[in-house]
Image (cartoon, rainbow over all chains, first blue to last red; front, side, top):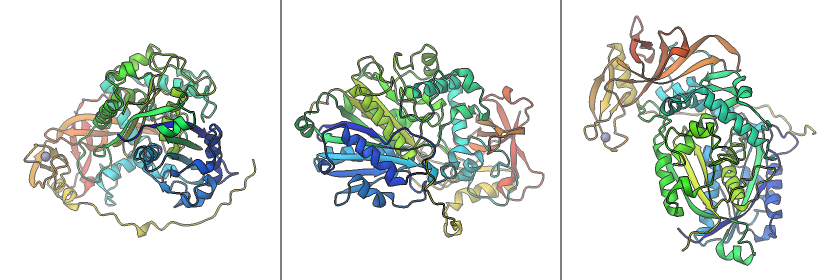
Length: 415
Length: 149
Ligand SMILES: [Zn+2]
């Protein structure tokens, strides 16, 4: 690891919502940038470099960073754009970290956004959502077939994710009611987060269970919305944090990493060997990150987690794969109240991705929310009251084969 | 909130895109279907059997050419029940798409599952068998579906 790096500020453009027809991409980003700067004494000229990102082509704009750079004060400065699908936000954050840790820059801003009302992200996500497309990726296009393995005809559903959900439930010996329960908790957590998109105060298991099944075991209430929104974070070196007098209310980056496995679904025509609920790569990456962060026992040393769950069963699966719970224990811990904001290990106090999903922002929102929890600055009643020494943030992308993990904490790792 | 966004009509010519796929893996598999055989490739080093079989082992990163035939029976791995269409409207005849690990294969195949009356009684781990089309012609569609045994 290079120099110590701290996150000193996290800013949002406002509440995430479905449609912002009144503004364009630069206008969506700018308020988040101003919000992040406004929480510090820093001026735009203090930022040495920018790392920015969104999901490529989802908004139909090819190089939005060129268009937007004037609006985040990036003109004349180094600007790097990164687009790695679902993990974009976390990749942007990790690159911003490397900018500072390497010693090349002292103050770097990371920006992630998505303006989904300007595109059709559902088309881009077919491989995850529809078994027809899942099958097409699996076997390649085969126009000769009517129905059969390569032409799963009729109906539409939550393909790859539904397979993963089914596999998870079998492994954990859990049922759809557990997915309903965790989905309800996320929507009611979201009601305590002024920036969250789908806020349902007091949302119950029955509310979620009342939504139609799309593809068993996933229902409408288990899926994420398409949101518009932006997040900006400022990362600085330890020296600058001291110089700015900002060492009390910061989140130190203690460990980070990313990992890749074979595509658990959808690698063209080559027999797939990996179960999408296995997530070996998440376990391997988590171990590396914890060791970098000096975390000996994640179950004791980590007090809050923000995991990237586009579908509610993943709110059960990821904490297990991150080593926060024993495998198969998440549903039981959820039932005992362990997931709640005042629980034993709060999972997604923000309401998570099933409540808010501006794709290119989402994986950074996980890091930003973990940072706010460490700083004690989460607004609107979703701050965990218990003392937080360490928080973990997670992101996934692709067809379940990419993972990014980071540990933030109150005290920096000693160099 | 004012509607200031302009909508611009345009088209996107997808014929400009070309996808290259490793044809050897699929052609071995598809040719086998004509003779009602399920063929894959096995790695001589780690023993992993891929169906369809790529010409290299993804674990060992070496070329592999050992062709193997796997069983036409196997285990129901994971599945999903389509109860609604793309627009969220309930469908009259739900169908199950599934992944199956045929005996002797380390990879899973996808397909439609039949032979059930109540989808609620379908469980992971059930035994299934391959059902062929009446006439097989060397196409993916030769493999009609998987049937619960
Ligand atoms: Zn091998």
